[in-house]
Length: 85
Image (cartoon, rainbow, N blue to C red):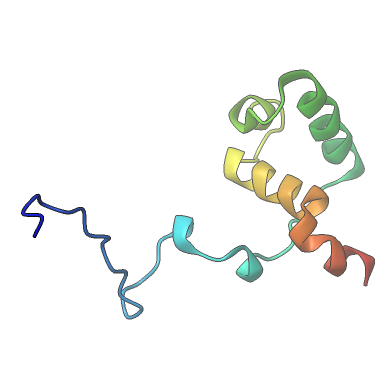
């Protein structure tokens, strides 16, 4: 029998509190953006791609995570059925 140590996957307890990174995207609330903010995000994304911290730096009061979440919810496949409803 093989005596080498094996990597064991860490089990995630369902009773532990979740951090923001662990929250399912299905639990996100839709983020409202003005037309100007949305236009700027679209143009900046075309220039710098998904470098959300650079885009957020151009929109006062917005965080990179917020911009990324908005983009995913607006353009992601998982949310396309919710947008068309």
